[in-house]
Amino acid sequence: MLNLKPTSNVLPLTLFIFSILFLSISSLVSSKSTIEPCSNSDSCNAMLGYTLYTDLKVSEVAALFGIDPIALLTANAIDISYPDVENHILPSNLFLKIPISCSCVDGIRKSVSTHYKTRPSDSLSSIADSIYGGLVSADQLREANSISDPSVLDVGQNLVVPLPCTCFNNTDNSLPAIYLSYVVQPVDTLAGIATRYQTTITDLMNVNAMGSTAIFPGDILSVPLSACASNFPRSASDFGLIVPNGSYAISASHCVQCSCGPGSRNLYCMPASLAVSCSSMQCRGSNLMLGNSTVQQTSAGCNVTSCNYDGYANGTIITMLSTSLQPRCPGPQQFPAVTAPPTTATRDSIYAPASSPAPSPLHAGGTRVPGSTGTVLPPLGSFPASGPAASTLGGAASGCYLVNPWAALQVMVALCVFVVFL
Image 1 (tube, rainbow, N blue to C red):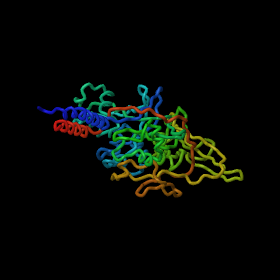
Image 2 (cartoon, rainbow, N blue to C red):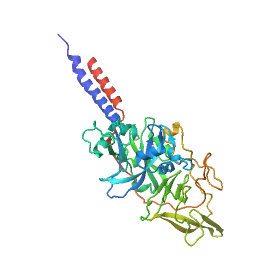
Image 3 (cartoon, rainbow, N blue to C red):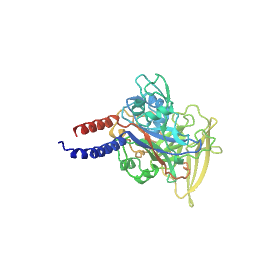
Image 4 (cartoon, one colour):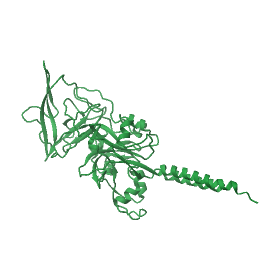
């Protein structure tokens, strides 16, 4: 007679192992992104962390996200004065910060200004996982474009690409900040991300409503980047301009260049090197030009008069003359360290470099990059930064992101083999 007793123990053991493996598979194929509820139509400036899937020109990367190539370069503190810089080829695996507009859509913050035209070899999965680096999922693409059969894509089909973003009033702990949507890589830890972007584990956990420090490849975290914020009137086309620490931005139809120096909270704006045909940049009632300042030491302190930028409206550059009495005279203006267009992807550039490059040496003419044909970001002045105070506590929601389907398949095969041999 056969003894069936051992078999009675196999079933619960098998079910237990299956449960464990099922949970493991779930962690492989699903990941979370931070969801910020919203109730109005306002938009804000935000950023995406993106790693190039192949060699691409600056203009090609910009077209992939529907942004200005100059905005892409300045957001990454790359020198725009190099000849034909928009056709410069950026290397595969290079990490870039992509500036985007973050809107309120159906009560949730997201960016919907990006469109992608399908090619013959494309699938929703390849577009999501490869071309857009996991910033969007195949299911999100299918839903956003009302695709009933994801296996059939027409060549040249124009797809809306919904991308993750958060605003949180562009503040972090009541200080100006811009939020980067960052896709967690296999090498990442929460402590490492916090160090890289000069924040704390506690801040990251609060922003992303995390109950523990556990993160998984494919998770999308909102990372607050210290920034300099503008205080332009709502009538200005560049209302809400905010520049991450250690980078700069071009505004007013490429006429004005605004920078956020290392460790600074003050947005400093001056005529851009690209300026060709621009409206007057002189402050009314003064001989000072945009970005110029005068200082006068007195017994009561230091009198500072500055010609500051106050936005771009109806094709006109708005300037504002400000005077203040400060305890001491300001030192030399600090500028971001501007780099040459990269030709190779180093380990630091692959795994997202720190958001604030080290200060570069200054001289009377400003910061010049070796090999540059022009002077970038010259001297003195300040503009008070501001930003609405608000809590940065966001809600975390689960979304389907296919991180590694082959790993899941391997686990399933192993499970089947295990059961057969039992």
